[in-house]
Length: 499
Ligand code: HEC
Ligand code: HEC
Ligand code: HEC
Ligand code: HEC
Image 1 (cartoon, rainbow, N blue to C red):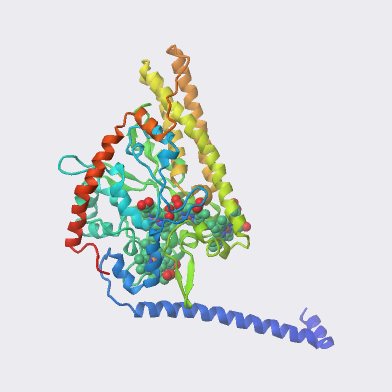
Image 2 (cartoon, rainbow, N blue to C red):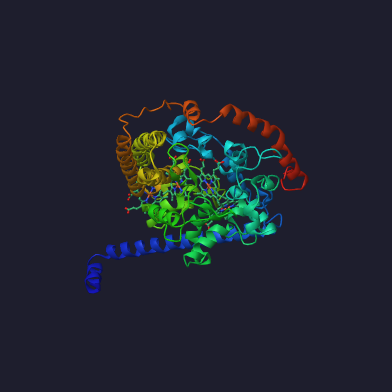
């Protein structure tokens, strides 16, 4: 072949020049690439050399880190913005129970039926957990609704307090006990080692889950760390035992069935449904687990690739710390890999979401009906042995529905898996109805009247929640108790107020 080439060059010297130019261009481009890599390293090295303040230990005060890393800090602060809405998600608040009142019935007997709003930026983590009706109004008269474990995914003050008090002591305290300590929203010390600025896992639950699977988190690659820092919080979890120890149910695997089996084997239930009396599971937000089963994770992408894209400013490249829907910046997220228009890329996302939501809408109607049929059966004297099978089916159906719905990005992260899970939920909802129909028939009941649960207010009234009282109590608590927590935190130097 080489001989042929040299003959051709002899015949036509222009070919020789052509090859020479192509090679030179190649060498030049490779040089550029190498220069850019060294440059980025140099940039980061200068960045660290120019630190303005020394950060030691677990420093939860984001403002102090901001002095050293102004670009990351300024973009991080933008998680406070509420200026983006895609078709189904975005960084604005939305009262989900208002738009989907059946959820009130699905969660009857559980705190989620009181209030459930769409997630928003990380900066709101503390504000939202203190303001929600789900944490109640703990003070000297009212006891706590939640353990301290409930703070776990809200603040870099959590690892700080765990270090001070011990992990077990931290979890088993009452939620209100740490009200004046957990005060800074999700920030730098949640994901970074202050000395090296390497990504760091600060939450024991993730490290322990890895250990029980015989894996070591220290072996994770830098690319895996770009997802694992998020997996400290965006995962399925439960509060184990009386010590309310935060635990990920991953021992037998991370699919929806693996985790259900884990819960079944340990006889775990989150609550007993107040209408159907089914032993329920509440899925949290298995974003990481579902993502792993989708096409992007399987091609090696991590969460930060879409939610923290690189930005450039004055020749300096850094990670955008405004964690938000990637649809807000398609040019710096999807389009870094896909040569496709913004309109098309948006359309792919919406199509996946719409298809999943089509099934979700059917489930919410049918599963609600199953709960109410079960209540009717109990009201008419059904026995436990008549009900057991149907109640298990309700548990399974709702676990699957919740799993798919609570993983807010799931329908895009893993479209096929999400639709599979939803299909099984609908199937079990219908199977539960068939079982209940048999029981109702044997009790001589041929028709079940469905209540009007077409608004949040009607649904909450139907499940006997006194919302006026709950709201009044919370309003009063926010005026009286919460300010004392903040004042105490300020007096103890836990919040920075002068930067
Ligand atoms: C310490 C726990 C924690 C860590 C770590 C964490 N998150 Fe979150 N994340 C939350 C909480 C809590 C919320 C909801 C905050 C609220 O609504 O008040 C949230 C909200 C979000 C949202 C919704 C934002 C919006 O605008 O609606 C996205 C997207 C998100 N996180 C992605 C990520 C990614 C990607 C990572 C990793 C780079 C990550 N999170 C790491 C706890 C965490
Ligand atoms: C939810 C996790 C998370 C939080 C919170 C977070 N970071 Fe980061 N940070 C990352 C990730 C992921 C990267 C990319 C690291 C990589 O690719 O190796 C990063 C990178 C960085 C870098 C390296 C340069 C760059 O921009 O890529 C600096 C410096 C940095 N972060 C500073 C901060 C500061 C300051 C804060 C607090 C205001 C903060 N980070 C909060 C996850 C986080
Ligand atoms: C290939 C890009 C991509 C990757 C990688 C990715 N996501 Fe997403 N994520 C999206 C898109 C697109 C949405 C839907 C946004 C919308 O509808 O506005 C989304 C939505 C979300 C939401 C819901 C946001 C909201 O406003 O409620 C969360 C939370 C989230 N992702 C977390 C994660 C976590 C955690 C990881 C890693 C385990 C991850 N994402 C990896 C693209 C990605
Ligand atoms: C870091 C690179 C990268 C980013 C960023 C990225 N993708 Fe991808 N995406 C891929 C790769 C690689 C594949 C697999 C391609 C293949 O196998 O042909 C893929 C596949 C897809 C697919 C086909 C999924 C399937 O079922 O096979 C869609 C749709 C898609 N991406 C949309 C998006 C959207 C929308 C965004 C932004 C929110 C995005 N991607 C961000 C790399 C990326």
